[in-house]
Length: 53
Image (cartoon, rainbow, N blue to C red; front, side, top):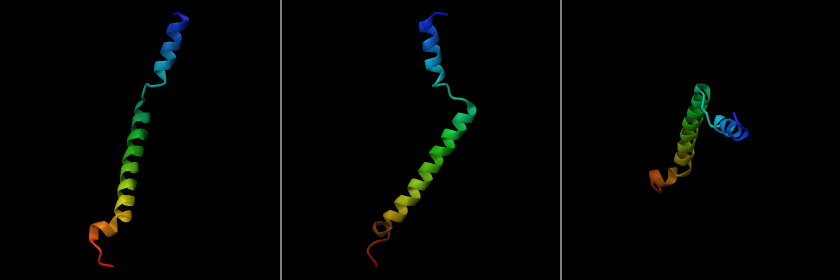
């Protein structure tokens, strides 16, 4: 294998996703969406319920 081929192979190896890495990214994404939704509901609650108070 040439030097260029080895560098390319190690470069692409950084982007290979293992099953554990995929699960970790999926869980992180789901948690981020849920937390963002909760923060948005709490922050914009006065817009959702109307100006009663």
